[in-house]
Length: 229
Length: 229
DNA sequence: TGTACATCAGTGAACGCGCGTTCACTGATGTAC
DNA sequence: TGTACATCAGTGAACGCGCGTTCACTGATGTAC
Image (cartoon, rainbow over all chains, first blue to last red):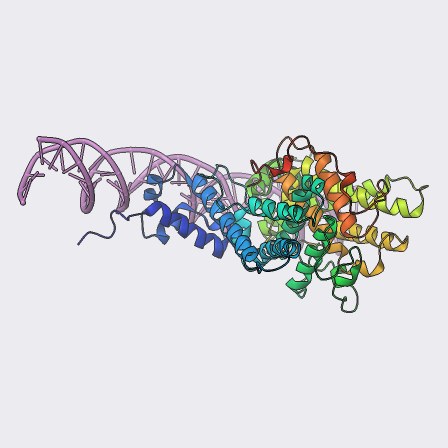
């Protein structure tokens, strides 16, 4: 029987998985050589058999986090029924992608931070799937079905990504009032994006009116700067 | 003549200023007890005469960074001529605030990171001025002048902040193509926010059309995922 | 006005810790013959 | 089929460093009398 300490088998992939789990629990600061090695019951120096330094390992864990995000976006889009009218389906898929992005940030704030942390090395390969590509595909479908003006494709990615990423950052960073339901954020931001893109929401086909927004309970809940300083 | 090493005078404020300068140059990671003390030519233990620990000092430096941002927003708003028609003035002030936010992130990325970094202690006082309040004031002026629907106030802060903060994060984090001019980002995001809020831009009074967007040079520049992974 | 003294704001050395990384090594694997 | 050997993937100890923080101290300040 082989000594289980030697020849782990696939230590590189195991370290990345461990990094993913550590980042999920504790964020970027938990990505340390010794902790990663301990997670795989391996000596710290074994890490250097598979990565030139910690920076490269961190960059790949960040990539895994982004890929996890992209997969959830794609899965949410694919969950939209395919028997809808093409235009409505394109809109619903676009909304599902944004909602998945927000849900990921709210449910896995540490992983979200890791996905977009500053890295001092490049990842070993490109994101696959890529969240950016998933977004671009959805926008192109909006154009193909006539729901968005073709010229809007020039700035639509920037508009959509800014809004959703900004809201996701606030959800992950707990910058929003704790009693603010995620659904309110989702509705406000996603409806706002559709209006910014000149796309009519499938529910309320009257753009530029606040009707789709749930009524504020008492005074405007977002007006409090208790948490968002 | 007093020994200059003793009785610094206002070491607390000086440490915060030094922290601001260090964060500006090197971001949150540069906020270290020893480096801060050295910046003021003081021994590390002197820091503990004015702050219980590093976390509290960091929280106050972050506050200073947010206040610097808020001041630039307010200054930009106040630079809008006051002899304009009230409605147009309110819109221009709102645009100026957003543009200042984006310019701050692009010009001082490290300071921007510091402003919104995670802290393990609360700041010693509230932000003054507060960027959030500056935004709220501008939105209320949009309503007061009839440029925005009052009901929109419920979600307008979230929509505006998400979009601008998201774009600012990308500018600060160098997630956007390097050859993409800041002006393109500014125009795309700020025009998008106005459309999302149902506010007619003062230039192009035809909302929901892409006319205000500069023509894409060749293929859509944002479609490249070279830098935005 | 001068002096004793409590208070304050620093010093300087050290502690303990955990980090990334290196180095000589050793055990396991796989291949040539 | 068995064996020598090159190669690979680990070990374990150590290095050097820099970190936040503590502690006993000391020099300067300001106030009471």
